[in-house]
Length: 69
Image (cartoon, rainbow, N blue to C red):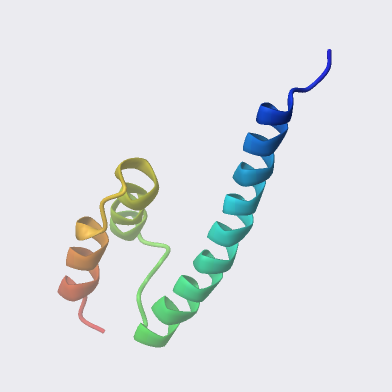
């Protein structure tokens, strides 16, 4: 089956977005480390999941602001 130019372009965009997301995640993790945020806690994982799932940053902001670091 021949891959259409449109599909190939979409896949290239998806791959590029994934690379950008990995770079952003590395930068974000460094900032969490600087703040002393416990990124292994279930509460953090649940709150952070909203970014990828719903595109909502409010839960992670609320979590970080409520942390006693």
